[in-house]
Structure formats: structure tokens, C-alpha cells
Image (tube, rainbow, N blue to C red; front, top):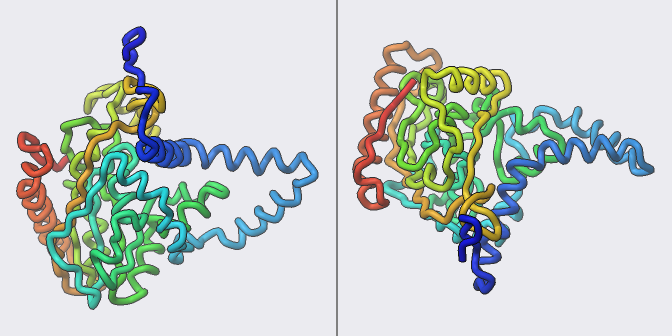
Length: 338
């Protein structure tokens, strides 16, 4: 049914689909609003008889300040909530393994692309909705995210319970020193890739990003390319600034200063399919490639880093070209920018 150009959702929807929509609404709302709303809530509590709770949390916050750089506070109970399986089935999201990850080694997974919210990697690497621990037995994986997210009161507790740590050098060093079977996933393109998170776009900010390669060599960790097909298809940018334009320069300046990419996007709503903050139901398939071995070297030369980086790009391109025809991206070409 259409009203004034808006396609309305039907009144009679199976309970299963309603639960899926509810799970996605929870995640999106948390992603967009929980950080600021929780800070506001703690501030307002100061002016009530419950103000002591805010003061108590402030003491805890200072004491626990660097927890996200020391392995976080992972909770298997939170990672295994049924909520995440509803979210998985909304799109749906799939996890495809192309090679084994031997638990005798350490790994750094490159996660591409960032998309608007990284839904594919949330399901695959952050929750157990796709049974990562069973697909890759003996591997304990932590997704690394922007450190600023771990500085937001209460929200930091939520993301750490999912096993997410910050992406600082201290955090990577700490996790890699936990020994064999440890793996970290880094969304290498970061917030810069959000500016190109349009359907059909496969540009990756990766050409000059070599820090993760250097860290892998220093810790003797194997590099693993991964790609989430369909990640850029679930939202549409309302205002798509072109590279080099004044609008893009302003967006980049804000992103550099704050860590966030200032973009306007739209998907669908809870009761309509035309616009809103919910993503569209589009299939997402996260494909995990083969490990690229490295030889541990505490002080790798630039040449060694460059050679390993080029091999990583070649393996990622091969992974993309091998699987793109299976997931509706036959005409797409992977491009490495910046």
C-alpha cells in the first residue's frame, strides 16, 4: 500500500519477521543514540536522590579507564543472546569459510568494507549468531573499534561485553601477547570508507594503510583478508559528496577531528519501506580468506612491510573476484584508494 509516495508495511506480518525487525531496531538505536543518551542520563541523575549512582559510576569509570586496551570484558552470555540470531535472519547474514585457522597461530583479520554500521562483522565476529567459535574452533576473536566508543559512559560496558576492544597500539599489543589462538579483526578502512558506502561501491581505503601489516609482522601473526558482500547495499547515502569536492573536504575535516564520519543515510522505517533509520533487508555474506603467514620481526623494514602489504592486496582482490559472482556483484570491480 502506497500513501503520498510512501510504501507502507503490511499490517499482517509473521511474528518471526516482527522479532527480526525489533532486533535490528534495538541495534541501530543503540549504535546511534545510546552513547549520548547514557551520558545525559548519568548527568541528570546527579540532580535526583539517585545522584550517588552517577558518582559511584564516575569512580568506577576512572578506575576502569583503560580496560578496552587490556582485553575488554567479554561476556559469552551477551554474545549468545537470541536477539542476535533474529538480527542475523533479518537480512540474512552468512559466514563463509574458505580455509582453516590453525589455533597454533595468531591472526589479524582485515575486515572490508566498513559500510555504515558494519552489520556483517557484527554478526560474524562480534556475536555468536553465526557460531564463529564452532566454525573456527580454538580461535578467540576480538573486533577492534574506535577508541572514542570506549570513552562513552555505559556504552563502553555494552560494547566490551561483546568482546570489542579499542584499536590502539596498546590494545593490539596486549591481545597479541595472549598467545596462540588469539585473533583480532580490524576494519582497516575505518570511518573514511563510510563516505563511499553506497550500493554497488567497492572502493576500499587500503592503498596506504600499512599499520596493521607492520603489527602483524612484529607479532608474527598471520594476516587474513575478509570481505562482506552486500554490506554497502543495506543503506543509501542521502547526500553523496564526490571525492575532492568542498563538501567532502568538510566531511573529512570533521571525521579527522572527531573520529566519526558525518553522513546522512536512509534505509526503511519500522512501518514503511521508503525511508527511515533501519537497514533494508539485503543479504550479506562475510567471506573469510586464507591466512597469509608472516615471519616475526620486531623491527621490520619498510620493504618487508610493503611486500607483505602488496601480497595482502593481491589475496584480497583474488578473494573478491572468486566469490563476487556468487553473491550478486558480478559487474563490480574492487578498487584500492588512499
